[in-house]
Length: 187
Length: 130
Image (cartoon, rainbow over the protein chains, first blue to last red):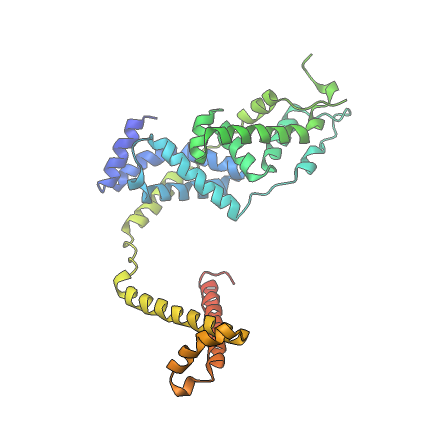
């Protein structure tokens, strides 16, 4: 994905060539849908939110100041929209207390299979307060890049780092039973 | 015996989030929406020039009402100083209003409250809030 391609397409769209927007949609549909999916874990809703993000980006294309790359602007816009959408209609969540109780009792020692444990951790992220959840979602979506996550969230890096730390601490404190010692594969 | 999950484990688990692919018609659907958006007429700007005189008159009327309320409160309070302050205003009013200022203020306040309530109700109805 080339930043110069984005810039060229934006200039063509602003000049009135609407079909040039197809290039932008084609390049960014995957990332935008996947980001939305991480916010809502609902494929249909993720596509609806991503479509709305593309529409808003189209309307606001003239507001993109080229001091940042197009993708940074697009992700910030999409993140802002997804956060508002999730505040308006929250994704289905369960409480951290419910997640912390192992639901799969196949393992007699109380530990979970790896897959179930991973799933429980992901569900636990959803049960976190919004500010920690959003920081975690953006951090892992951007391959653990705090700077990019902070830009998408429109927050200082220090704030994002603090929220990441606090969010992971909450996860750690609420999920100890997912890692019962006898099932550990490490020494 | 249990232990806390480590940050590295959380990193490892959350970094492996499943990726989903856009449905086949997604890009087409977005472009349809964009073309509809482009074809739609631009929104009509708010007519500030026409609205401004009305807003100025409204603001002036509101200021008058507020002053009347303050005067009425001072009169109802019955302080000697307030009496002195309100007398010139009372005498400046036409004879028909003299002695009925309190009622006028009460009715004005009631009317304003009703107007506010009806505006709020109509706005909620308009936005589909009810």
